[in-house]
Image (cartoon, one colour):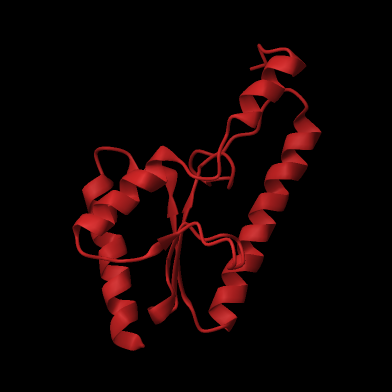
Length: 140
């Protein structure tokens, strides 16, 4: 599929993308309702984790299927193909580096794909995140 927007329209659309998504807010709200207390989008930590519990050295990243090249749903745009391949592969490589960094520092790290949070499996994924946090708390 070729891009149906002009370069100016695409630039304007891309500039509207923010670092925090509605999906992250939905996950945060669900975890907060379950009694978990954390910080969101901590810029002082490598990779700006979406959810952080410093006391227990827990970081959680919510990765979008497009920007982080999901093996199930990731796809490359058909226009400006080489740029997007390079960009998205760099994102994927950076994710691997960040994951390795936290593991080496003794942090508990979890990555959740965007598709794991769609409506029909949202509660199950929140349960999975809760179990991860509880387990990490016990291990510290």
